[in-house]
Image 1 (cartoon, rainbow, N blue to C red):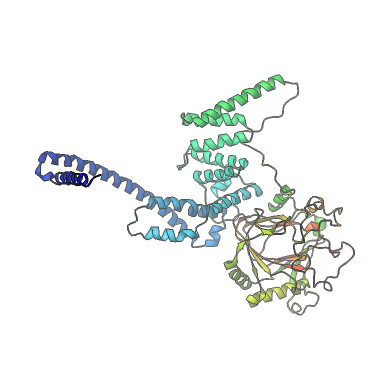
Image 2: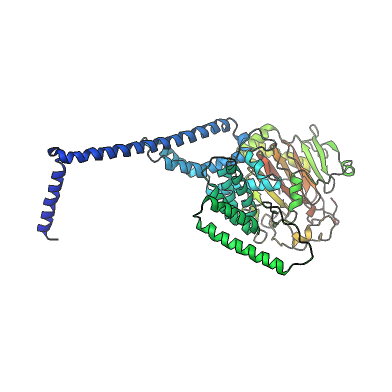
Length: 557
């Protein structure tokens, strides 16, 4: 554009601005302002209404959370001992606080937004919320709890009652769905639908729940119910194109199925159809899953009267060990073969609190050794946090180590550091061995080693080769808390369950005197249903025990 053109444009613009600035010179033009002001007032009142509605939501939510925090801060560990409370706390931080931030866009003092932004780096992540949801499902399966019981929060041993809303149940179902876990998806979507049918107010709608539920039951092979649920969805939302398309497809499958049955009709009576809405839990990777979980519930324990008569309790001085002569420990037999014993009052409350205090800052997700690579890694079958403590860090650690050495008669010189573990929400460690298995163990045909054949062919490298201390010969496990419900130590091979009791410890040998692994000692830490389970353990190794526990040529305890 030429300079004179720009000059003329500026003159025109100035004229427009001048005219618009002179409303006072014309009543006719000023009448337009009357209507503009009316429109602005209407818009302002709408803004005020929306702001009041927004603030009402914020105030309501703040009051609810304030009530929760008054309870939770009075007894944090007790409050979080209830798994529903733990799940909802993680969900609030990962989801609800983020939603609240969008409501508080106009923060005049900038105080809340600034604080929220600063604190966000410490919030649980989406993975935490997913893990918490899966923990609830794990408890549901292990302890055979239905979704209604969990959603109402009435769990054994808990002094708190915390319920799950329809939105919470929907979130649980979505977590399972995204993990292609259709079994749990159906259970939790059904519970969400039940709560909505009962009239509960929620953000999630019946259409959303039915959308997931209808497709998931189809994935489980229940076409009849998929049709029923999809039809119900379309009654609520006639414009749902995907549901309409699904319905046509499901109905076509049913028609084909009906035709096929007529063609192949025989005199043989067909098995009854399963009840709609009830589906079998799929099998998984763990061969002794049913036995393990039954023991966690206190079922199937093989403690017969005859075996019970062989179990005794006594005072034990560690074969005249100087540390125990004047103060022998109380020893109880928990099992006869393999021998598992419990020691009473081996840790004082003062020692337990000090160990926990030292461990808490270092707690990190517990790892397992990959059987193929020998590398430590995180696994879903071990859910806890752990820390390792050396005796030079505090005199109490040295004292506890000396006590374990005196009780067992084994040296701690070649033992691993004291490992402290905390099992939180649904915390567990599925059946495993403490010792490193060898590719061609001599115990494969032993009657007591029924799992050895299956497990032994999963060759694993010598996990402790770099330590130079040999295999783990024995395990000393200290219980540093009581657990309100769940959390037992179980041995699926011979059907034993040992329940945590604060201040006590259990001990067993992982290897026979011949040095071969005792496959009967495969054990597990059951999921914690209610509570926070603290343990510490010492693993003794072969080297240094040559004269303290002489080897033998046979598999004798």
